[in-house]
Length: 432
Image (cartoon, rainbow, N blue to C red; front, side, top):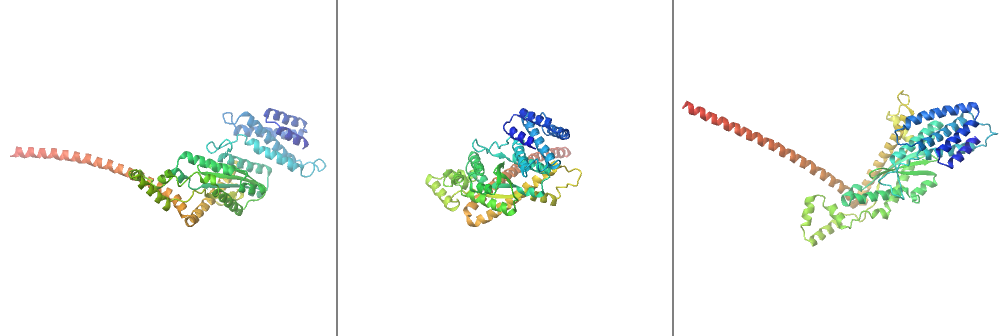
């Protein structure tokens, strides 16, 4: 046990996988024959899994694979020592094993994910944000570790997934530019990454680690790792705190200024025909029209809002079982496929709750801030109008093509009738 602890401390001081391999070999030479055979068995099994997981043609480099193998060996060796050959109380103080095991487990998390998968669009040099794939990979690894450790089922309640979908982003695109929207989404990512945020500090006081993730477009996710269980009420409270803090951010509100002439123009004139008519007006008439638009339609300020919901892994397991997706008694089910199904249902449950909260928020917004509600709805109507316009244009083009075919058929029929009439006249002339 002490040898393993010393090895862990030395291995933490270097990222050189070759040095760490030598440290493992030193430990192997000092083990009794029986334990050495067990370690060799773990080495062979780990190597086999590595070759299948990281083929030579894959993206993983040799250093990452070697570190992965070392940490896996340490964890499995510790698991064997603690649960199969527990040392006498005289050889190890109470609680020492748990602390050493926690050190190895935390290092597993860091080194297995050394590739640091970051989102390339929403990341900035000061605020790099992980991608959703990273979060899924990390959660998958946590579930695998729990299975190896034979952890109690209550541990599933200590991992949570939260989904965040922003409001008004498509409307912002309609009123400004894609570049401005990208900068806005980067600022939202910075808000989630800010460790000084009120909600982030509230979570950390409860000993919950937060990993913000970019889930694509205007969607984000949070991977939560806590020391205690996370309930549905906890996720509701966390969502409320995040959304309240988000709506109060003045730096985010500045990305869309409803007093800007260009924003007013894009918002109030969704079609090219309307814009053409507007630019034919005299400048005073244009100003009068835009002033009326501002008074009647435009909100006082842009507010960053969205829908948010979450679920813990235990809830995802129940959902998977209830829907018949997770069938552990079927021969085709494996630990790998089961983990992926659990993660999938956990994320789907979080997204479903996020969609419900988003719908409830919009219903409340209709009364509390009708102009902002109309802003969100108006841009939806604009997009529907564009879709209807495209459909109408396609139908018109199809109708023109059909009429052209009919006219060609009519011309051919007239020519045929003309030829037949000429032949009849010739026959009548012969008879006469």
